[in-house]
Image (cartoon, rainbow, N blue to C red; front, side):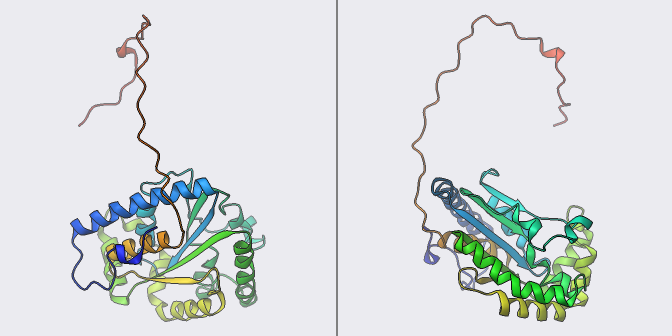
Length: 271
């Protein structure tokens, strides 16, 4: 298990260099692989929910967590807007099918908390639906905890100034402008409404066994390291790394005649 003392923390006041960041990230990603093997071996069910302000760094943190892990064990769920059929379902219904089974860790890039955030602020749900969510969500999550599921909830916070800087960067970046959606622009104009919605959400859903953990996202590098370090600290895992294997010798040539290479379609070698 990784402890808080082993990693770079947000308490450090000096700027985190790229070299220090990459070294610490590599170490933590090795620990994540160990955690993955423990989850598989013990058939643990781990659910990690990522919520927070737009451009607060949720996606970057998720990418660094999953970078070295098996997609068969560690899965990322980022659902689109509900279909007309899904809108008629019990609110939590479309999320249930993606919950982890034994030996899996599932990361939700936004989750059922859409109802307490964007749906509430943008009036995509009725007041009665919103109130019902605040009543039902703690009950639902307590059921998950009673089923022996490890439930972790992260809220990524970012300052007004830093969010604006990142939004401005997305406008002109050819590989990032797709991240700037109409809802992101609305989040800027309704900053205080989102703050009120978040505070009320915390009041009703910060429960024992599924409490909220706040991440300071103004420094992306530190936020990523701190989240990974914290996630590792929540599971008392052991190192199950296998012993180095010895590759067997390749099968001997038995006289088989392979088809000519010029009969195969190779991609153009541009580089």
